[in-house]
Image 1 (cartoon, helix red, strand yellow):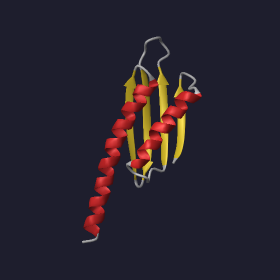
Image 2 (cartoon, rainbow, N blue to C red):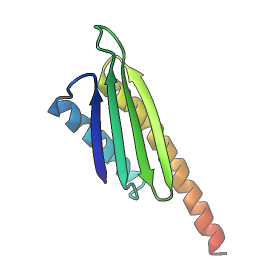
Image 3 (cartoon, one colour):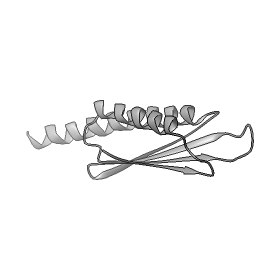
Image 4 (cartoon, rainbow, N blue to C red):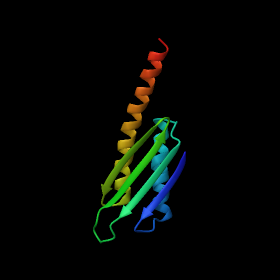
Length: 104
């Protein structure tokens, strides 16, 4: 899976990039056909402002996306990963049902 991480209005350190990479890599256990993931991390720049994350993921013939907000970027990424996990499970079930109908 190709991964692109973009930080808006701040510089993302290596620890944050590693966290994002590890979390998104775990999604492969739900569906291994993920081809690309783009992550955009945003920070408003004011102290105490919320952090946001947006993940756009390409799978076979479809694009899945999720957004999350939190006190830290890690919390925002966790929200995105939870949403994408649900979407991947639903997508995989849909593929299996189509495959089952095809082989009847």
